Length: 309
Image (cartoon, rainbow, N blue to C red; front, side, top):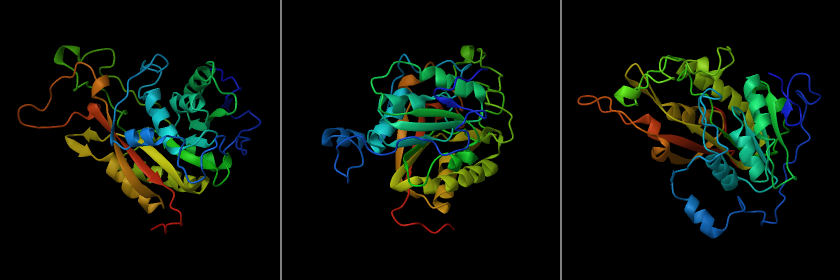
């Protein structure tokens, strides 16, 4: 697929693996100690630790375009909570580009990375929509997240926000066990929805390999964050051969080892966007329905460097 170059950067682009000419300083007039541009009333609402969002018309819902998306409203909430207008947002696994579009809407600069050309082209397409703001830039870059430090200077990022691949969660045939019996064999049934079989793709890895790879990537990203800048990761847990794989716990422990400080857990309540749920486990094996909630894990770069253990 052809990738236009107004928002997208690929190997032949002049900016490929060079520092990007992109803004990172505030455009607002907020006091320097403020975390964001929110009012006190907006701040109080954001302190509630369970969030719920609806999809809108610009959201990607077609799993043929991307198998795992999140609402624009979620990305914008995270971006507006942890940044000011004009600051720089980084998404290491940008996928369909929702983070970039939300940053564009919120007048933030943003850079996203992905291994798949089709996803970078989709980002480019979505960023062509009319916008109220012309003061910020958004780039979608076709490159491995391991090369991000080649593009972004140290201590310029105000937020790392992403929904990464979830180990090998999608790298198996889908059985639709959360669907009602008559609806299990839909167009997704027995399909492998994994993004790719690229050996660099975190979605092909076991949980142990995945956790280490995430740690390696995020250790490189830590110096790019401003001190006390936040890093938010959206993950679920998963079931594998009747065992709960606690991805969120693995990531918390791994990022702590890599120098991040864990600050908050937020629950994304998905009950309003999950339809026609089936029954499983009854009557002998109680399992919470993983499609109804996910975790938003909030870290920051400590004011003083933490010792990497």
